[in-house]
Image 1 (cartoon, rainbow, N blue to C red):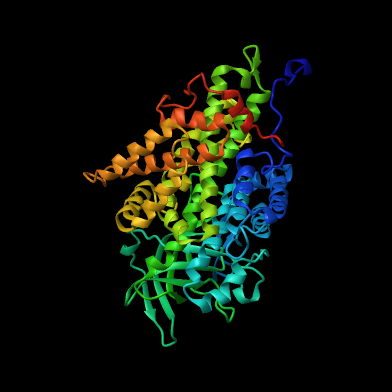
Image 2: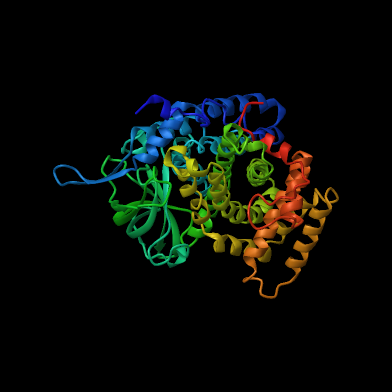
Length: 545
């Protein structure tokens, strides 16, 4: 074939070799807002280093390799002995090791620990979301373990370590450890009180043998697992080590790995316990209460993880449209495409600002902020994760047929997008948790109203949305059937109040007009044409500023 017939032109260069953190204005501003001045240079430095790694061609290649080579279960060795090991591609270990080394499991003991860790998680999982699961659960296990000071003293230094050591051996012999989670079972799913796994107490205080199954066990290559089982006193939380202190393997039969829609670089398994040794965490019968702080922390990571997917999707879309020409001009300059990109950028920025506000509440730790989190986390988890899939799908369409091809990376983002809405309780669970907080914890609603009230008077559409929300809250008729509607409204009002206070006027104006004022169609790209959409799109452009 003649070379002249195969000249390549009007193709977009890959988005690589850039600082994922520094190129994200919404994120960099949030970090500055929520970090004390004396820490800011240090935090920016570490996030900039992580951002440059995440945007490098090398790390992007690791992400593609890890996704293309899913984990493999090795149930037996060559001699027929049961080993129940999961084999990962080397790229997975490199990604996970870099994440651990960057402090993404070590938020609880550092100044501004949750803000810097949430920002890092948002940056790093843009390279490949699958390694976020073990990072998240290891991080989130700390508050549950702190209910038992002896366990916390033993395990917390390992979980918050910046050292990643792969391979199965006693945790005490490692410089760092990972923790997985096994809560749901075949017959119950999110209804963990329906679990049938039995826990039989041993003579030694706090020691039990567990027998049963787990339908979803996350990160089965981990050094230990927090699991729920039925003890004599009711549902109880346990720490089950993968390898016993004497070096022998704890009974932990991996029956199969899940063949998942997305998140394919990460392993999720069905496992069986058969007299597996475990230590009780917290009191018997109070397992759900023991793990509730862990669940809240992983739910926040669902919000952060969805914000990461949104940011990477909009970055790819704006980058593509900046270089791609069609119909006589560059796509980004076409009014209709600009409208689509601006709408996507609004969704991304609103998710980022909300996620970082929640992380800052964790760092604050005051009674008021803890009350705020009890209602804001499930509302945010419900709404942000719900918006992720349609938003990523629209961003993919901005690339046209190129976006539908695996090499673009967009199909991987789209397959990943639904996960965070399902993990740690799907939409109905989150909406009902919002109702539960409203009904049982008056301080939570007061804290929420104080937060959104800080923006009152700044935008008439936000003020009207707050009044409508209060009317909705005052009407208890059919409240359970309206739980999704209420959670959505609360999340949007919260996002609007944060953007009005902190985002540039053009971003806040566009959000309030479209999300709170109703001046918008059902699809992305239907913003009022009178808004300053050029500035909104330019703000989302993934270049260093």
